[in-house]
Image: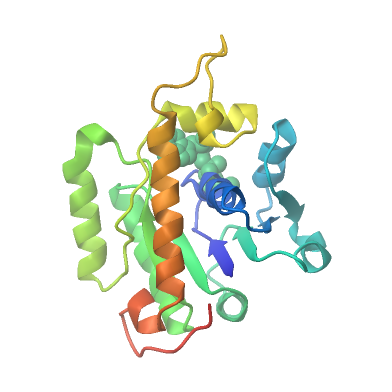
Length: 223
Ligand SMILES: Nc1ncnc2c1ncn2[C@@H]1O[C@H](COP(=O)(O)OP(=O)(O)O)[C@@H](O)[C@H]1O
Ligand SMILES: [Mg+2]
């Protein structure tokens, strides 16, 4: 299974999403490899800080390192270059677009989704950093994306300080602690959200493209 986590700007939780989906599938006993294709190499930096149950490799080392992986997750910033996007189409079962429920983030996702659609890349939007106190904003973003024909995953990732702590410690969010070593009280909410996302992705990519992206002509994809 080949998943690419993509977006046109930094700070939208691409690396956080790559690390956590990899953690979920590794936790389920799968051989997982994260390919860091982002110039800032933040997935590699995340892994070096702590202890993660899967390999993280720079894109230059991907060919060999991913040979035995059942799940390959590529963390990378998308370009709008059509040829590069065509390569994504060949290399990914699904491109996941993490998107915060904010106007500009939604606009950028719509732009990228349209480019992906033109080159026939199956893609789906994941709402991230959803503030539990602003559920209405998230619902509106979901509706706006869906009304343009984009597939938006039902699971969404809550805005939690535990993700920042986990990143600092180089661990999956379920192991996030504060400075005194006390477990973050909301850490399992973040972990179970990514577990639900992984489940949904497995269902999506075992179905024809029509279920993944409904904008235009459906094409079959392999799992
Ligand atoms: N759901 C979330 N809640 C709170 N903070 C988050 C969440 N997801 C990611 N973050 C934080 O947001 C920042 C940017 O996330 P990151 O995954 O590095 O984005 P990108 O890879 O798109 O640049 C990081 O500090 C990360 O810990
Ligand atoms: Mg990143």
